[in-house]
Image (tube, rainbow, N blue to C red):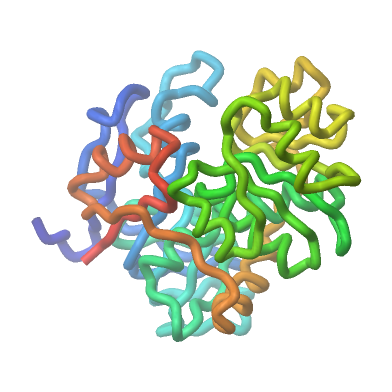
Length: 307
């Protein structure tokens, strides 16, 4: 159904729970505050963090205080510019992080970059979260040109972003992925290997002098990753919260790498950055999008499209 003047359609959950809690609601439009822009959303990325938030996994047992629009990232065309914003104008196509939810006809962006002309809104709608996560972890690992790292879970959205950002920084990457995704890993500049038993021996064959760091985007094989790294301080995970008990850093609480959005936009404009879009869904089918993203095996980004 079309939204009414002054209102918009948005995907919200009114209580914590499964994907069935998602509703397409008619809600008031948001407006850009100081340092923000508002976009007419064309596409919104769906990420594993979205289902974790929807299920209340970050709420510490508290009840949901008010209905919440799902989603953290979006792409679209600017139609409002807040006070203090320079370099971005009404009519610009941008992508970035939302303040107040992404799965809606309109969204407010707090951090953004301009969408390259050669990149679709669907593709750009899935750039922000994976890029920021990848850049943040690479910085936490303090990788530099000439280093060799292992990216565990290289074919997912975050893994793909990590391979490309590391490649552009002059870092050699070994990436774990299912055999069906080995060509993808190679195309992004990394050397693929499988997840199966014997991972430390395979990595040793590929990196005779060992690896300088391990980026765990898969959340599995902790014992093997520790053997490969040789020191838990040389591993950062985004997917295994229990790893902290073994001395491994869990990324998420430090400084955000929002500045990477401009780098990604520049790389994408030169054909040096892309993330596979696994599937797209309309707003009305957000539950299916969440269900696919929650599997952890989408094979790329899941994106909601807004007509």
